[in-house]
Length: 228
Image (cartoon, rainbow, N blue to C red; front, top):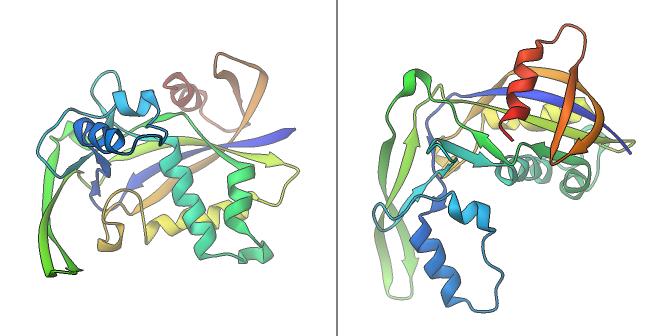
């Protein structure tokens, strides 16, 4: 089965919030739900230790840098597919994205402009409960607008997903983005560069040799795969 690969360079237009619980909260939650499969080890180990109860955070790589996981980007694309089901006459878009679209690398580095410090956003959460209205305080790690990330997206061929359709879906990020509190306008992003790549050779230990199509900067493609 063949696939077309694309290098996407993206930039957040608004601040983006961490959406993961801290390590102690995640472990405590899973411990209380015996018999339910736990968080994959690489995801749990990449969560920071407790900062403050109720804080949502970013995953971290081995150097302590904030990251997204591949499933977060793919989940965004699937959400866009559900929202715009039938776009370009494509039906059951969410299911087809799950089967034909793949995101790499596993951990996606978030590059902060000017190496700015991590900030925190606190806001009230209001809910109607059996005991009446309640207000809780939510706290999230926050990266500034201008933070960048790069991903490689594979589209399996032959299949129902075209690059034009995928571009339409990814553009949804300009309105509803990634991370926590997306409905509040956080995490909106744009694709600043969309480049087709060529992959040659069989995969070895999760890495592939990238041969860049005509007119594409080789150094950029190599950089992304080197961070897998």
